[in-house]
Length: 143
Image 1 (cartoon, helix red, strand yellow):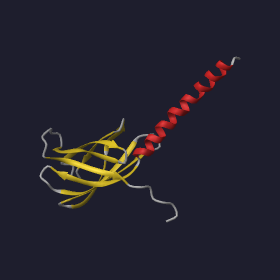
Image 2: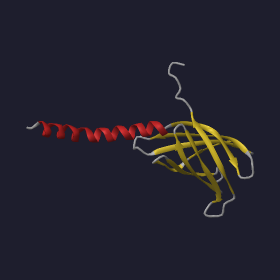
Image 3: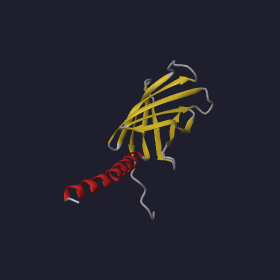
């Protein structure tokens, strides 16, 4: 074997591992707790947080917590997609009457975007607004 052949084999063997490593670091970049606030187009502002993680099948999972006129609300994000620095998800209201569409863009440790609220099965927008969250540092072990 020539040196060139050996180098080619070594480089080819490293490529899958390098690609796997990149996706793992992408996961770490997006997974975790993101805390901030949202503002309605009507001018109301309140608290908002997301928690993103991947399940054992490699699918993104997420929960959202926010405060509105009814107090603190928590919900599971449906059809959560995180890829290429963007996030998209849907959220059903607790009573199932409305659906919230959420879209955002990651910028380092910041994530900002828009949301719109529509009656279930309708494209009419009942409320819309913007939101901004910042990634919380990972909790320190042993505390």
